[in-house]
Amino acid sequence: MTKKIAVLPGDGIGPEIVAEAVKVLEKLAQDGLDIELEYGLIGGAAYDETGTPLPEHTLAISKAADAVLLGAVGGYKWESLDISVRPEKGLLGIRSELNLFANLRPAILYPQLADASTLKPDVVAGLDLMIVRELTGGIYFGQPRGIRELANGEKQGFNTLVYKQSEINRIGKVAFEIAQKRGGKLCSVDKANVLESTELWRETMIALSADYPDVELSHMYVDNAAMQLVRAPKQFDVMVTTNMFGDILSDCASMLTGSIGMLPSASLDEDGKGMYEPIHGSAPDIAGQNLANPIATILSVAMMLRYTLDQPEIAKRIENAVSKVLDDGLRTSDIYSEGMTKVGTAEMGDAIVAAL
Ligand code: NAD
Image 1 (cartoon, rainbow, N blue to C red):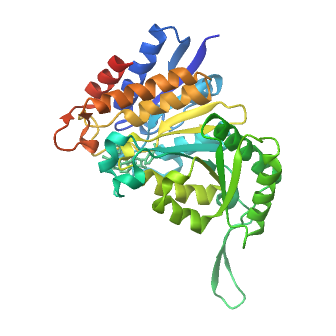
Image 2: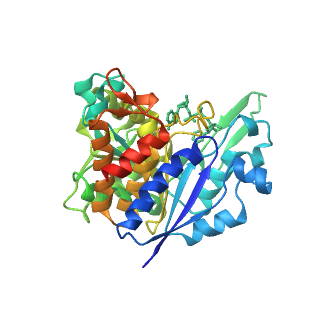
């Protein structure tokens, strides 16, 4: 059956990098992948055209699609707009409208780029870890929250860290299933020694592990996990954690790999439908100059094939093509080092398509 993909290029470098990812999809379609693309506006581009960063049409095609491919949103031009219509509102809006509760952020360091990391090459070369972050619960959403005035007139800020068993179960299942498809190791990160909500998190993960005897479950307190991520990141295969811990740890992990232009991400709903996007933003400083690295977006397509379209062999083909192009010494500016061949956005996309 034809799989529908909603394509939302967005702002800044978004249209340039998405164009390269679409070249990859079109090549795969020529080779027999049964897909249909439908385009929509999002972010500042949508605001300029329709007065809202998330038009009805975009939401409708995204809901109807099997998967969504997103570039990035935002830029200087829209910074002075009211927060309710800023480009970023379109992104948060589509995530919540599609109920994307599971955020998958791989941190992969191609061995060819080991020098690009701030860590020693032997610590990070070959790094391939996946952080599964709960995205719609926890302290960012818990009630009550606010800033109140105490009896003595002093102000007090407060938030609530809450997790229901059902929320932990559904993110846990996603993480166990991903671990099954990867190296079979899952590390659950919590602070069960001091936070009851994460004590329940740990208990729930342990109960769930009975359904996944082929996955080796371990636990780590978040402070230790932060330390281990920079000390010996290759000990991890899949990590699963709460919204806030995942927010912090995944940014830390992304920097292990050197360039933000290399890292894809996926946000999934309960049925495995997903939105796929690079982790970086719209990079207005380099937009329109053929300078952006399209690899994060192309690897997001690989994630789409693996996690939503259930085509792991084709996903691997894309990842191998990226690796081949890096082997050949092609580099966009952000990953360039002496002796390599510097190429632009479009040339990098063309080379990856050729390597496919
Ligand atoms: P950014 O990720 O856009 O850029 C940070 C730096 O990384 C810039 O120097 C940029 O040139 C560089 N960079 C980013 N992607 C690159 C790529 N593919 N190739 C080469 N270099 C790349 O973050 P920022 O500058 O903080 O934000 C710019 C805009 O993007 C803001 O409006 C922000 O709100 C928005 N933003 C959007 C998303 C998203 O759409 N998911 C995420 C983060 C930021």
